[in-house]
Length: 176
Image (cartoon, rainbow, N blue to C red; front, side, top):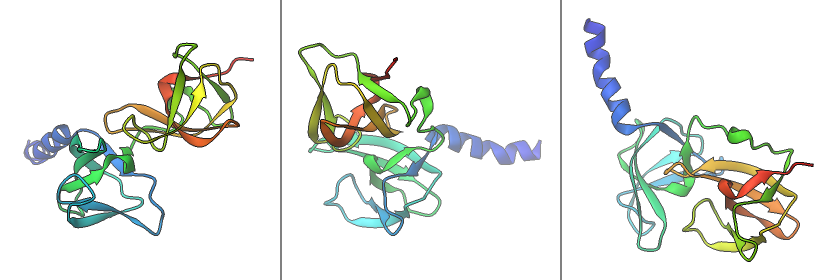
């Protein structure tokens, strides 16, 4: 019974802060800046290494320029804000939902007179860098990640574009 009372606060903390996140898309010789508020103009108060795990997201918000920032907590830092583009859920696999890197994909779920926006990073608020036509095929998935809100995005390449990010809901494996 004493052990249960000692573990109970940990249980409440884990429920309050949800799933764990990890740092992504940071070079091994770089760090992720932790800021006093959401945005690059705010003072840097700490940093997270490129391979940091067990980050808890307290909440996220959009800044005036449409970028998503999340207030995070980690045992090695003060509580602060990081750009959401550099964190992803820790325990989700890049190959979940049957996405595989050796298969080819096609564009789906858009009208024949429309195009699929290709973005500079995962998320609708990132800059549009190119587009794929509704019938584009032979798309190669380079990797996938989830935004802090749980939306899956994949970095793709195609002969008609360099590479960029698309929402995974708009691509499906090709059947030959």
